[in-house]
Every structure is written in C-alpha cells, then in structure tokens.
Image (cartoon, rainbow, N blue to C red; front, side):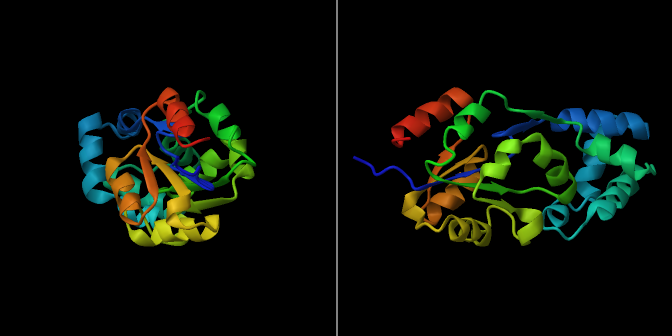
Amino acid sequence: MTTPPRAVILDLGNVLVFHDNALLFRRLGARAGLSPAETESRLASGLGWTAANRGLLGAEGIRRDVCGSLGVDLPSEEFNTLWSSHFTLHEAVLPRVEGLVGRVKLVLLSNTNVLHAAFLRPKLPVLERFDSLVLSCEVGSVKPEPGIYKEALRRAGCEPRDVAFFDDMPEFVQAANALGIRGHVFTTAEAFDAQLKALGL
C-alpha cells in the first residue's frame, strides 16, 4: 500500500481559481479599441509575461507594459481592476482543500505576478492556513524550472517521494515527476477528490 503523502503542493490557476484569458482579452481589447485576437497577439509579443511572473516587473511595470502594447494609457486603479477581472473562485474544490488543513503540509506553487497575487490573496482566506505560498514573482523562478519545485519542497520540509503535487498543466506535472514528486494533473474537483482518496487522503 502506498504511504499517504506528508505534504500536498497545489497550483493556483485552474485549481483554486479559474482564469478566463479570453474574457481578459475581450475586456482589455474593448477598452483599447482592439479585437480580442489583436489584443492577445499584441500581449503575446509585447508583454513580458515571464518577466512579470519572475517578479522583474512590479505593478507599475506591468501596467506600463500592457498599456504600451495596446496603445492605451489606463490609470492604475482602472487597469488593476481590468487586469484581474477574469478570475472566479473554484468553489467546488475549496472545501476539499480546507479538509486537508492540519492533515498534511499545504504549499501553494504558482506562476503569477504581483497584481494577480495581491488580488487573489484576500479572496482565498484558506491560503492563510497554508504552510507556505511559493509565488514565482516572489522567488524569481517559474515552473517548470526545477528551482521553484525545490523551493516548494524545502518549505514543505519533505522528501519528493512524500509530496503530492497537483497542477492543470501536464508539462508542469512532468517536471515535478522528474524530481521524484508524485505529480497529478488536476482536472475537476470530483477527480481531485478521487485522487486524494487514492493517495490515502
């Protein structure tokens, strides 16, 4: 019988919250007078997504970068609201995560930027009960780089074999598996429940 994990590492986007990027492109595009497709294209080529996720761009840097790419100058308050307007909580999964508190070490591992992190933290009070939050913009490394997983392991205080990791991106799960972590692709709250039970949780 497999020993239950001592720690569970969870992704943020499309696990604890949903992010509808198409909605983001529509809303930003509407404000800039651009089609959603043109908005996506400009952001893909212009915005340093990875730079933002590495913490190399702060809140004002992100605003300037996005607005510059779209040819519009939005005040910070309006921009910050738009920039995070595509998130919704994954209500079905949150009680399952709450149920893990106190039973295993809980660590968040997310590729995110300072604005999204600041927006989501107060909306997810369960994060206050996590043992650690490993946010790419704070540690300067992004998935699937080994360094960010090793930082999560260090904070969990566990060997890779004692950790279960859940992420919606298969390539990020594969990177975890390569380090000996028990990686699982997250799909739905119901599947997550079955995965936890299979792990002895």
